[in-house]
Amino acid sequence: MATVTVRIPAPLRSFTGGAGELEAVGATVGEVLSALGARHDGLTERVLAADGSPRSFVNLFLGQQDVRALAGLETPVREGDVLSIVPAVAGGRP
Amino acid sequence: MSLRERRLAELRQQVPELSPAEARALQAGGACLIDVREPDEIAQGSPEGALRLGRGYLELRIEEQVPDQQRPLLVLCGGGTRSLFAAEDLKRLGYQDVRSVAGGFSRWKEQGLPFEVPKLLDADARQRYSRHLLMPEVGEQGQRKLLDGRVLLVGAGGLGSPAALYLAAAGVGTLGILDHDVVDRSNLQRQVLHNEERVGQSKVASARRTLSALNSTVRVVEHEEYLSSANVERIFAGYQVIVDGSDNFATRYLVNDACVRHRLPNVHGAVYRFEGQTTVFWPGRAQEPGPCYRCLYPEPPPPELAPSCAEAGVLGVLPGVIGLLQAVETLKILLDLGEPLVGRLLCYDALAARFTELRIPRNPACAYCGDEAVFPGYVDYERLCASATA
Image 1 (cartoon, rainbow over the protein chains, first blue to last red):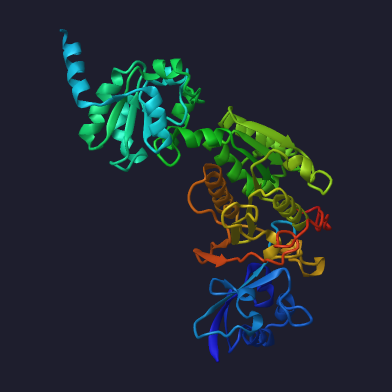
Image 2 (image 1 turned 30 degrees about the vertical axis):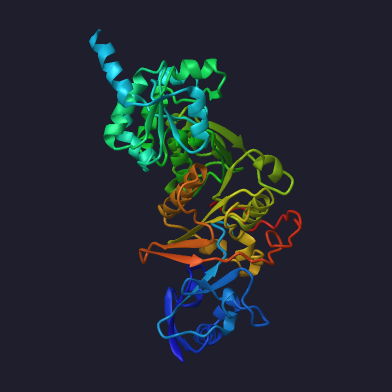
């Protein structure tokens, strides 16, 4: 298990009480997201589809790497890793 | 014997001469042909592929242009006299193999060797762009590329305003401005192309007035319409670079799909509150093709999951930062300079004062730019929150 810093983008901060960075514990990207979702209602649904896969308009980066280019939600995380949630942003009008 | 004749006789003993035809053959083999005549002479014609360096700055600038001291230099002037003096200077500077073209450009032309009439900057342009001309990475050739450049700005709003201002100032010759909207007072917090007098007026007309006042030599093309599947091909035709500063997903996907189809670089920027991101989507790039917007986000979010319009908002200066990064990338592409922001998403968090670079891979299975992709056609996605203003 590792403690990971998760960067929450501005559009999703309404689910984290305004916090832009949170820490969560898990062994994989998926576990870290679950741990975070358990504390913040509604957040997981914005990031993951009903079947548990990342939504097509949200990307997850572990460090600089897109997790799709790694092992997706199964990608193992290490202590101190940074997981960034990066949703599509249109601009003023969604 | 006059002083001049005696000196020339001396120079002829030190500097080997060669005929224009021999110079042409050596040039084809990698030697550098240098035309040292004055700009008004060069304006009448100069050997094809020659390096044009006036005698006045020859010794100061040659090293930037020809760093290799072993490379043969063939110096040419009008009749073969001034080139002897110049050649001697270059030898003294340290170039090993310097020769003078006997008979100069007059004999070059007589012998039917190829020459071109270079497009030169006029005196106004030399003054205006002098800080570009001073840098060898841009120089006169680069400035010509900018003057011949054709860039379309999608949106004359928060991102498009700073980008358009600096691209016009830099001398990008043709700037297309696409926007259907009119100036609203709430725009003035960040959309610096517009001003109080123009509230209620068309944004493209306002943009044209501002840009023309800054640089009257720039041709501003007004596209006052909504981008749709019906007009995207017509509007994009003839542009080299598209700068996406739009404010809605419907437009962003149309921009992406047309850029993929026509192999155009899509200089992307987006802002939200205190955060912004920018990248260059360019699957059509000849060397090292990058991802497209759909590699990153295959589909727009459904309306119920998109951030609500009421939540939106942006620090006024933030689109300034991102729009200017887009302008920098655009100039780099036009000048073919440096490493474009292809395959990398640069994210700026103003509150943390932090730039983060994320790697965005190309998706070989992408429906639009993937290895097996056949253009699926344009999609007009639903426009949400049509009454909100970017």
